[in-house]
Image (cartoon, rainbow, N blue to C red; front, side):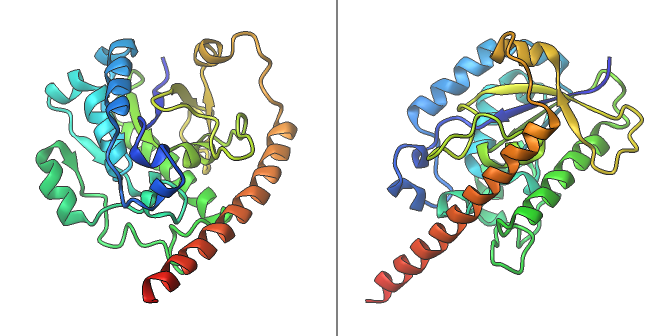
Length: 261
């Protein structure tokens, strides 16, 4: 069997409750979010096969990983924090905490060796500014990291990556399910399972494809999108993304002006 990547969207955070809550910096999970983690922990059928736990360094993804994969955590698996898997927007809810507070909060639970001091800087001159080309580049970097992580773990390796609804579309290169006013086609704590398209490990893009049983679990007999349809959906999403970036910048400027007055 080829290595498997289980991609998971985080549980409900306080920022998911209202537009205004998007101004909360690196928010906690809600009580419902914690219950969603409990349900995922019960429903996920591959706990005994997981070899690695990975999460975005944003707190809600770390908590989701901790509460949804309790067997793995109790067995001593650390959660590897991967900064390229952080969410895409400029809103404070999608800007992570500094490293020292993360170390203080999570201690030995999280491996922060791959997180740099400037990981939460999203100015236009950084790799984390939500420019479409930069987002594609760090999604590719995320896939390459996962491929390197498991290359010595054998064909039975199974990795969990807990991340965010926006960046998941870039990681999977699948734009289906996005609708106006909703930035993702993934539900909170939804998981989907993937494998690398190129089994030799030579693909410079490290593209992944969803496993048939994963697709059937969530879509039944629905026919997958063609490559042409995927490109058309990406073109439409890029327009929406650029609009949302401009709106976010305008709102940030407005907030800053209000704070000065």
